[in-house]
Length: 178
Figure (cartoon, rainbow, N blue to C red):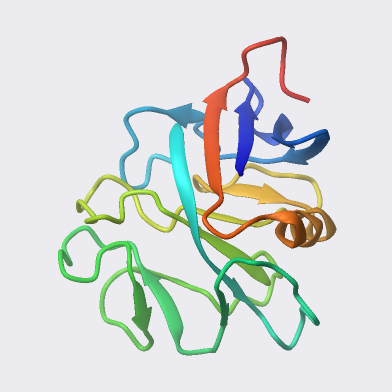
């Protein structure tokens, strides 16, 4: 099963397509690229396997999906420090000395986080990390390089995905993404 993310010139107006469904999504503030680098705020073009779904059990009740589920705790982080070649683009335990994302967030953006298999087999420091599908801001503001959807859309999408699903991020081929 493949999810298609079509980008546009406006990163707040990308769209995710699956079967006959279309969902509005946001991508990185820098748009999409084939040459992803750490900190460029770009979403990487390509085909990325959905690895795991992390979620806040205190905020997301009865999440249903065929994807592997991991409950987020306050001690979970994600290394985005290219100087740490052993932990780069990996789940880490907090406190953690290197640069990292904190998965337990108060703003709700990481209430559901889908780990995309970008730069992870093996990770190459500097080519980008923490590329996720997660909850969008209410105004669909651009992300740091992730794909973001409304919480209800993300929940619905996860319910219908098969294990081993792939996300393809590509430039829009017909007209502007909506």
